[in-house]
Image (cartoon, rainbow, N blue to C red; front, side, top):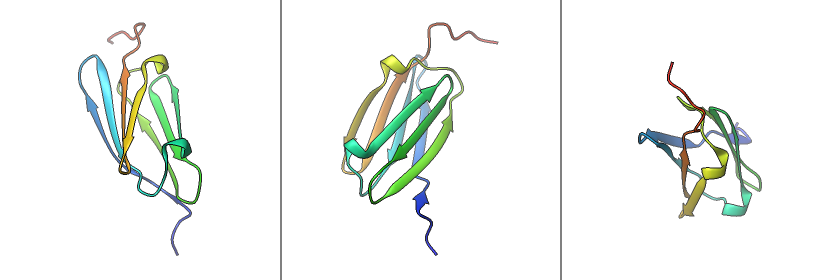
Length: 89
Protein backbone atom coordinates (compact mmCIF):
# COMPACT_ATOMS: atom_id res chain seq x y z
CA UNK A 1 0.00 0.00 0.00
CA UNK A 2 1.29 3.45 -0.92
CA UNK A 3 1.09 6.19 1.71
CA UNK A 4 -1.16 9.16 0.91
CA UNK A 5 1.48 11.61 2.14
CA UNK A 6 5.06 11.31 0.98
CA UNK A 7 8.24 12.75 2.42
CA UNK A 8 10.12 14.78 -0.22
CA UNK A 9 13.84 14.46 -0.80
CA UNK A 10 15.46 17.53 0.76
CA UNK A 11 18.97 18.97 0.88
CA UNK A 12 19.77 21.79 3.31
CA UNK A 13 22.85 23.98 2.98
CA UNK A 14 24.13 26.46 5.58
CA UNK A 15 25.80 29.23 3.62
CA UNK A 16 26.76 31.39 6.61
CA UNK A 17 24.24 34.24 6.61
CA UNK A 18 21.50 32.21 4.93
CA UNK A 19 20.13 28.72 4.53
CA UNK A 20 19.37 27.18 1.15
CA UNK A 21 16.89 24.32 0.99
CA UNK A 22 16.35 22.26 -2.16
CA UNK A 23 13.36 19.90 -2.25
CA UNK A 24 12.13 17.51 -4.94
CA UNK A 25 8.35 17.86 -5.36
CA UNK A 26 7.41 16.18 -8.63
CA UNK A 27 3.81 16.42 -9.76
CA UNK A 28 2.84 19.59 -7.85
CA UNK A 29 2.50 23.24 -8.83
CA UNK A 30 3.88 26.27 -7.02
CA UNK A 31 0.36 27.22 -5.89
CA UNK A 32 0.04 23.90 -4.03
CA UNK A 33 3.17 24.43 -1.91
CA UNK A 34 2.67 25.67 1.67
CA UNK A 35 5.69 26.84 3.67
CA UNK A 36 5.59 27.79 7.33
CA UNK A 37 8.57 28.91 9.41
CA UNK A 38 8.54 28.91 13.21
CA UNK A 39 11.90 30.01 14.63
CA UNK A 40 14.24 27.15 13.64
CA UNK A 41 11.64 24.77 12.14
CA UNK A 42 10.54 24.90 8.52
CA UNK A 43 7.32 23.05 7.66
CA UNK A 44 6.86 22.13 4.01
CA UNK A 45 3.67 20.57 2.68
CA UNK A 46 1.60 20.42 -0.47
CA UNK A 47 -2.07 20.18 -1.32
CA UNK A 48 -3.61 18.70 -4.45
CA UNK A 49 -3.37 15.19 -5.86
CA UNK A 50 0.22 14.60 -4.73
CA UNK A 51 0.75 15.29 -1.06
CA UNK A 52 4.18 15.86 0.45
CA UNK A 53 4.98 16.81 4.02
CA UNK A 54 8.20 17.36 5.95
CA UNK A 55 9.46 19.31 8.96
CA UNK A 56 13.07 20.44 8.74
CA UNK A 57 14.98 21.49 11.85
CA UNK A 58 17.38 24.32 11.07
CA UNK A 59 20.51 24.86 13.17
CA UNK A 60 19.57 28.54 13.71
CA UNK A 61 16.36 30.61 13.66
CA UNK A 62 15.54 32.35 10.37
CA UNK A 63 13.61 35.48 9.46
CA UNK A 64 10.45 34.40 7.55
CA UNK A 65 10.31 37.81 5.82
CA UNK A 66 13.54 37.01 3.95
CA UNK A 67 12.19 33.79 2.41
CA UNK A 68 12.54 33.61 -1.36
CA UNK A 69 11.43 30.64 -3.42
CA UNK A 70 12.12 29.35 -6.90
CA UNK A 71 10.22 26.40 -8.39
CA UNK A 72 11.05 24.79 -11.72
CA UNK A 73 10.54 21.26 -13.07
CA UNK A 74 9.51 19.89 -9.66
CA UNK A 75 12.53 21.33 -7.82
CA UNK A 76 11.86 23.88 -5.08
CA UNK A 77 14.68 26.14 -3.88
CA UNK A 78 14.18 28.20 -0.72
CA UNK A 79 16.58 30.85 0.54
CA UNK A 80 16.17 32.39 3.99
CA UNK A 81 18.44 34.58 6.08
CA UNK A 82 19.24 33.94 9.72
CA UNK A 83 17.33 36.02 12.26
CA UNK A 84 19.06 39.12 13.49
CA UNK A 85 18.21 38.24 17.09
CA UNK A 86 19.84 34.83 16.64
CA UNK A 87 22.91 34.56 18.88
CA UNK A 88 25.58 31.95 19.29
CA UNK A 89 25.54 29.81 22.36
